[in-house]
Length: 149
Image (cartoon, rainbow, N blue to C red; front, top):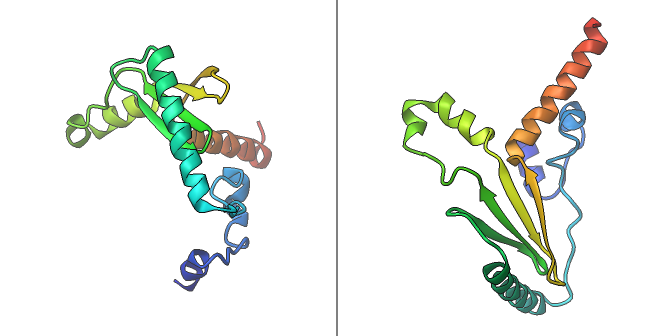
């Protein structure tokens, strides 16, 4: 419990992470906190940025029936569109394996909105699936080292 309290306070113990660190590539390690000169100016810049990006997305991007716009920082906006529409949450209770199979294997179209008017598209996977695949590859690699081919 004291380790959790220390982690929340910013005193991150790398000893607890050494076993899983090579498995997750430091995915959950805390990053350097950057302070801004003026949080108000940053908030204004973020608001102006998302307003410009949303107008650019509405005018220049053909979106499907289900897409979401995320603005993660000033000047950084993403449009995420899961292929196949909204998730069928009604089958989650009755058929959880079928639900997770559909969620994890669903293709994702990710569009990054650049400040100079460019829209950059990539096809990707859900972050959870990327983590699972990374762990699987590293487990197989470690097992081949330990057990041989």
